[in-house]
Amino acid sequence: MRVLLFTGKGGVGKTTVAAATATLAARRGLKTLIVSTDTAHSLADALGVEPGEVAPGLHLHQVDTQKSLERHWGELQDYARGLLTELGLDQVTSEEITVLPGAEEVIALLELREHAQEGRWDVIVVDCAPTAETLRLLALPEALDWHVTRLLPVGRKIMKIVSPLMKTVARVSAPGEEVMSAGERFHRGLMEVRELLTGEHASVRLVLTPESVVLAEARRTLTSLNLYGYRVDAVVANRVFPAGGADEWRAQWVAAQSRLLTEAEESFAPLPVHVVPYLPAEPVGVNTLAKVGQELYGDTDPFANPDVEPPLRLSADELTLALPGADRDEVDLARKGDELIVTAGPYRRILALPAALARRKISGAALRDGFLRVRFVSGGPDD
Image 1: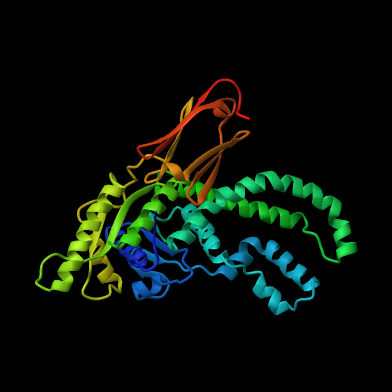
Image 2 (image 1 turned 120 degrees about the horizontal axis):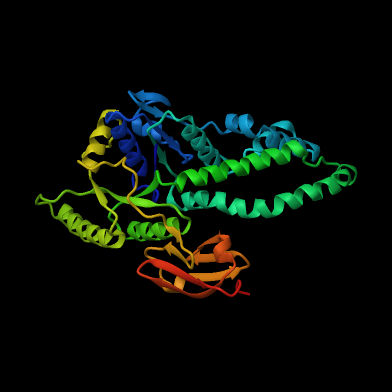
């Protein structure tokens, strides 16, 4: 099963590109599911249909956050609602507050895991939110894992002690065993999502338009996705003016876009840069999107497994992390016990070192040709 995620700066047409890719997959005889982590829910508008089987072999799924919360993590929501009621809020207000901002995107990822486990799909296409939200979302499973593995065992012990006090003094109920277990299931589900999306059958495709600001953000996004361990296997340049014509205004756009496309090819090499021309009308509907998909990929196979090395590689004495486009001044490295803390610009990742490297100390580190290489030697972990 192939999993493809599409993201890009807001307004670049990532939903159109995702929908065109999914439509093309179905036309090639692949059982295809397309879902969205974007709360805007514009997939149905792009396809011009309601969720369900929208064409032979093509299914559109739209997340129902409330139902999914109740079905999988009802214990957590029930406890939160009950706690807010005990604090004096009415039932309606408590119901609204327990659907937290960002919950829909997280639920979409967890439902993606369920669809993958069904085993009925050849291709799953994910229309992600704009880049900033997507990066926060994709970083969540590992960040949550770091906190949960350290805090949950301690939290269980503390709850057994303070539970009677909470009820007597604060007059609110402490979370019971079923709530703690639901929290563990939630955490386990997110880790399974990360395993799916960083696996050898999944990759991200960056969508951009040939504009300086958009291209700069796409370069930063590539660095950040590699930092978190997600493979990027292609870039899509959307809304590219075709060459030709005597109109001076369009000729200026063609020249500017041509220069930026060359810059994009240099920036993202060796990744392919697929081009979607600026269409005479908005591409809406399955048939139109299928033509866009064909134009986009041509004779290539966009559904083959990604021919890209995983961003993080480990050997007996070296850790290598791909950070294409990263500036040496923006990359920082620190170690704390058996953890390596890598910072690239505004993003940070805490890497748990395997036992073989955790027993060693760092002998050197260098960022060269888009790769951060950290070397280890015998002698015990660094202070």
